[in-house]
Image 1 (cartoon, helix red, strand yellow):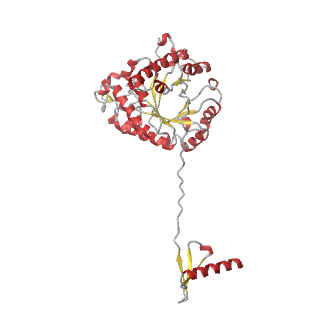
Image 2 (cartoon, rainbow, N blue to C red):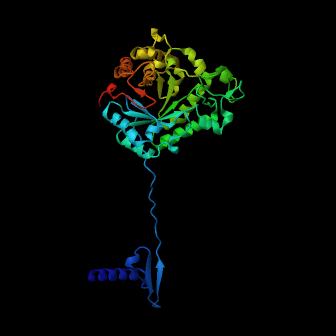
Image 3 (cartoon, one colour):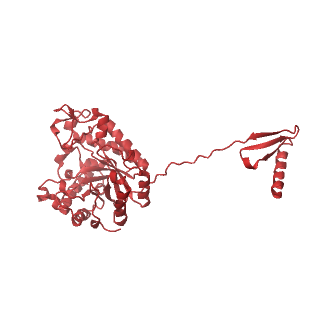
Length: 392
């Protein structure tokens, strides 16, 4: 206590001297930094004055991190329903942890139009942090032009049924947005940017095409107009280019899902609007959905393509490589650069055949033999075959 008095006295003397023998001050211990007493040496009066205070603002904004794209992506698909259920998704995270897998594709907007962060995945930030802590690459799946929620809000942008005089619907009764809708393009980009800002490492666009089933002859396009009937490829190509121009300058990786059939049958482009060469130029990665069950009977000489997964993957991959080489030649891009963009979806679900571990692995092996070392497994039920995968 004596030391405190001595120090306090010394400080008072210094202040007294600095003030020209006019003002003496001392801080009040319980109010240190907020007020002080001052005594006028001539009048002997004492007053209390406030000191200026400073406010420290602590930024509580979550720190968003990103994982670099692996040299060879090996992913599984996780629906938003599974991703939003911790007790269920942990099984898939464990599968990634214990096998050669290093990435996961998670719905951000599925084909219902619902955004996952609007209630589907309530702990999205925590999930992304957990995945990144395990060095898992996280891809945001964005279903594009099949979007009932968007159509409900903007019916004037929906594909129209000229026969029935109302909104057109596919075989499942789902409406589609006119692929030429620039407003929809902007909306998809907004979703993509927000997904990346939240921590997704890559944006994967699905349903990037025109509708392919239902009463196709009755379809009319309120925005695309006649081009929707005669130049589907041109419209889809413009959309691909738009995505490229929006995201590539920002350094955000983008990929596109395309029907696997276009690797071997160019006639399908007239209906879909999808062209593999166009996609290879615009996207960082192109994911052909080469599910053997989805190929026509007679493909590569097989009555039931689903029963011959390795052979169908070889057949379709050779077709894709030929298109990549031809595109490279016509655009002065190295063929190896475009081939490296091929990252197919393989089948891990029962359709056309009961898929065993050997059948799942046969697809991976067939692709690897042709130099395709990145791949993704699809099962809408998210029940994958661990035995088909190698350990870490």
